[in-house]
Image (cartoon, rainbow, N blue to C red; front, side):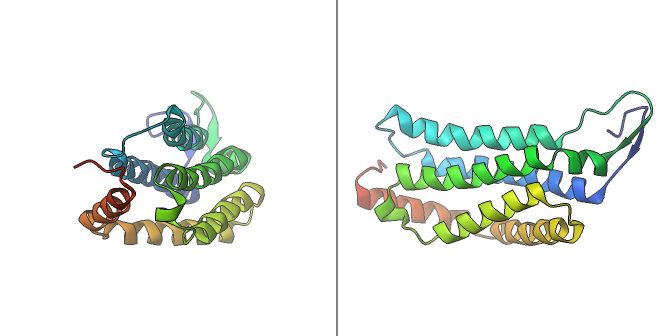
Length: 175
């Protein structure tokens, strides 16, 4: 967009969500390392890892505009026009990644403690797909950004240890 000869009207809301989706993608990729030592017993378990990734790719693709070579381009108008294609896949990604944890690691180890948070997050993202309330989009962007920032300061060893404990007590972890 920066190199386009067209006159691009940049937008802070679109930029913020683009950046957050990039951070979510990197965080999701980092989270996949928890599955390195998980022996996959069924092919279907692998699909539970692939499906959330596909939804994340769809959201990433939808938020990235094709800027025309000539004329003017409003990034805010693009954002409003494509919000359904951005936020529904994000909601599906959040939901399916939680289902993947339940299926692969096991309900008895993961538990249902994060399920209300997952459902609430998914519903908020779906609501974003249908509302044009700037304040709500900004509020959710800010809240999710703070949550991701807090996640950055979580010790990676703590996350690894929780997975290893869950998997070793289930008998599916190999050292």
